[in-house]
Length: 380
Image (cartoon, rainbow, N blue to C red; front, side):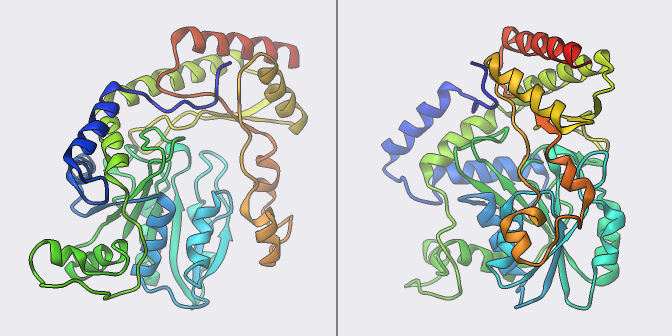
């Protein structure tokens, strides 16, 4: 069996977890949390990274930090994971869906402005599969209308836009270390605060410590700590951060291997030249690429299903995509209609994502390529 994903394994992860146990502090904000924070700030060339329990929680924090008010609107693509919209609804905002472009499946920057009203507060951009959104155009729109930009960079860690790391361009960037991501702690995330505002950064620290000023107490600045703001339990444990740090240390090797596999798929589909296929992933057009996803889009839904099922018959697991949010049960309850975004409606049934993980062997990759070639030749 060749799985769709397998979290990267390194021996140091076990060693570092044992070190946490030996140190006697397994809760939040200890030795390895600081090491992860320092690594990410240096690698991403940003000054204010806070580790969180998930990208979902990082997104929730971002909307609390911009003081999203009831019924204020947030524009985002429908073609994304529910966390992107949940973080708005949980802060009493209103979700406004828009379209993605047909080339890299990121938000269509040319469709954003028509969705802006006097109630619009922010734009969420989703860097799909490690591809960068058109951030120059998006930031220009945001500046023109005085809007916040939150980058959902759950899939975008270590990809860039014109030399800038994804997640460090908008006002906030949110990252995921879920087990399906390139760099993983099983569950985990981070938020990057991309402007210098000491009060806002301090508020973010309070928020992730359950709304208390515990950080001030630990720094010896107050004699007692207390409840000072709305917050939640957003701090990851040291055990998770120890595992994460072992992955960050190996991030270069992970990146190189994933890119080799990704390029192997690109070369294969370039050679196949099948009329059954209308598009496939080619990488980030704006800069460095993290090779998070390789997808292939078929002309017909029936061919996509045959392709995925025949792979499964050969012990190779490939995934379709989540139903676009405007078509989901929640989206329809919000008043969206099935035909609102025709491209997204037909896309999710015709897109197949292929196995891609850093521990994938050359033998496994060759096996997947051989089976794909056989299936496509029969489809043709």
